[in-house]
Amino acid sequence: AESAVNYIYDAINYIEYSRSIVFLGDMNTDDMEPKGDAAAANKELDGWKINNFKTNTTLGNFYKSSYITINRANAVIKKVPGMNIDEGRRNRFLGEAYFMRAYSYFNLARNFGCVPVHTTPVETLEDTAVPAAESLDAMWKLVIEDFKTAGTLLPFFAAPETGRADRAAAYGMLAKAYLYIASAKEHGVPQYAAMSHDVDEYYAEAVKYAGLVVDNPEQTVFRFDDNLLDIYDVEQPTGPEHIFIMPIDRSGTQEGNYSKLPLLFLPSNNSVPFYIRYGNGDLQRANGNGWGVFLCNDEFVETQFSTTDKRRTELIHRDIYDASGNPIVPNQVKGYFSSKYVDPDFIGERTSARPYLIRFSDIALVYAEAAGPEAGLAYVNRIRERAGVTPLPSG
Image (cartoon, rainbow, N blue to C red):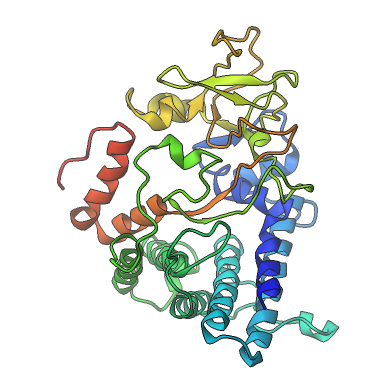
């Protein structure tokens, strides 16, 4: 049973899936853009204009990996209830399976709308031919019910467990689902506007479940990290922010077990390691063979941050340095780049930079958005203060 659950998690470590999280979640915002000579598929995703699903392998592999995850989860959901094992362990294994099924359908629903729904394992060729959900109401009903089931079966962690999900992860994702649906309907998003739920009721549910993560005496493991840069320290995967994080390590022998994610962000320096300099003068070693695929939008960087904002001064860079702190000239950097994914102890292209799937700050902001300014302001200001930004006034 435990091996089967590990096998579910294994699918999201696929190279195409872990990278797609950034391609689908960040690149098509106004914050980030692909480099000028990026592949056509990247530019399609940046503009959210897909010409051919089959030729856009990033999107296709994300879709495929999601269904591999779902099928493995369905096998656990089918087989484990009949196994003669400790009840507590059985509940946890089933809870993780329901969580991962819901997590996959959540991402599929956000990116594709109504998709084929499998709730049992594919064991014959005929099993592959299932219809898509008949409506967004039906699609999201499955996601919500699975996250609720996971929340009842899973415990709250007593200590962090890298790469695994607990009740905080289930309730955090449940809050995100309620918020996403409510906001989409309130703002008239096509198809979502026709959903049957009550917007205010769903906002209230988002507040309820996010509150069970960010303000709950039973949940004692996850909280705000006091130091902004510690969140992105590859040596702190069990930091208090990381509700759900991929278990990737540079000691792995195949990509997927280790990560090349920093190379997507970092610029090239002719394969010679360089250093990033932080506000206090500290230097951090970085790969010099980056691909520079993702660039921070110039206008976003130069107009949207105060001069004291550590999210700008510490996490977004344009200059690179040698080991003595001298600027490297000529500088091959094509634009602003993010230093959230850096592993100073990289081994060639192998790093321990793990994608952050659910963070405490993320769920705190879900609470704030759903609750509104009166109840949510404290969470927004906690994040602003950590970044060195003036708190927002009441109202």
